[in-house]
Length: 244
Image 1 (cartoon, rainbow, N blue to C red):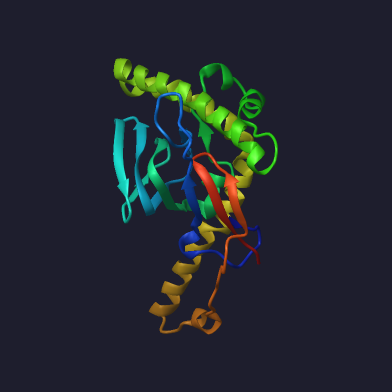
Image 2: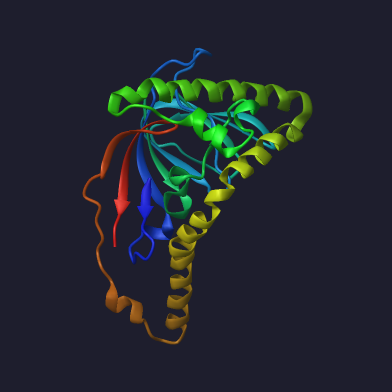
């Protein structure tokens, strides 16, 4: 995740967020190795595969798909696409996230069974990680396996009923994230929207034959991640934080 601090004048191009993801290499109950199926409600996400191989399983109103991944592959998906990474061997990915990394800062709901999606408190209790460092791995895998149960039910229901099979899950996910929406809006306004407005102002200036924005040009650098190996939904994350 690449954090964008409120009021900061610094952001990555387009207001995106980035993180380096090393996909989990622990086998799940269905025999596959990989991460936790989940959905983003407001943000798109993309993958650039750095190394290794595997696949991304996706489920959205158009159906279930499994897309192979290998070094050099680029894939991306819209909000509402449930996704699960499968690690075929040493899979590492550069993730590209809209809205200053909002998908890793709250815009994510795991596909838990319905009884864990009844309200926000029940959901947070079921998805909480315990311990520190390596001690978090068991709880990370427990929530992954719980989400896989719900994902399997959604896939089966989609085969039987089509796109309407996702309606209840989407509705529950919306209820869960609603208390976060004010913060999401601030991130968007101070990140991607602000940068888009700045581009519009630059174009206006160029049309007028001026370019005051060029006078404040700078080089920005993130020499190294600010956090290594954080337990994310899909794997271990090396994350970046931007400060003003």
